[in-house]
Image (cartoon, rainbow, N blue to C red; front, side, top):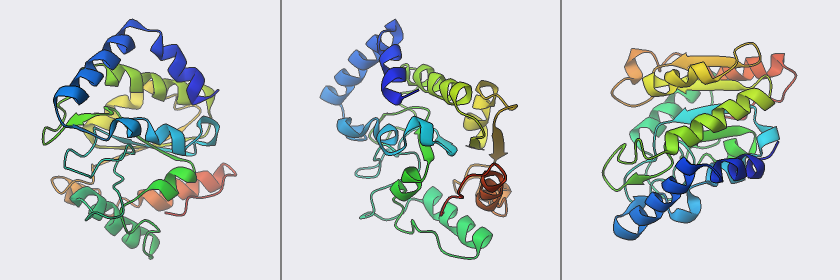
Length: 215
């Protein structure tokens, strides 16, 4: 299975045709993130057959120059947002070393097989979840289902209530699911810190005979 084949199937569906028209209109008339060329960036950095880990985000960062098409990731030139800082802190506490992505750019993870998927792929400037219910959720639900169906022994990391709702799309007989609190400042002290999700993920990968991620 390939991303090209999966996306081509979705492109034929009525909801997706409408979604694409609506999104193009949004880009023409409002400020939308990420850049149009980066909407599917997560798919270009992690091949379908290479997925070891899926981390689900909600929607892109809605500040200027922050979103780049991969969940939680930001360009290395900008200051790390609060959620990213908390992720880096937990890596340090969990693995007793700094992350290889201290600059907040998670492309190195993506290249190692960490698929960084937002459930909504675009957002209007300064308006979180502004593209909710436009059709992106239907598209990304299909992506999650296809990963569950055609891959095996993937570790799904579900942070926060929105991501945990996607659990029903994943076949737990074939995959591993790690659920927990979102790394945002609003919830990080209620269980994200100390969760050791990164060492747990690597332990599961090693158990399945896969190379661990260099977090």
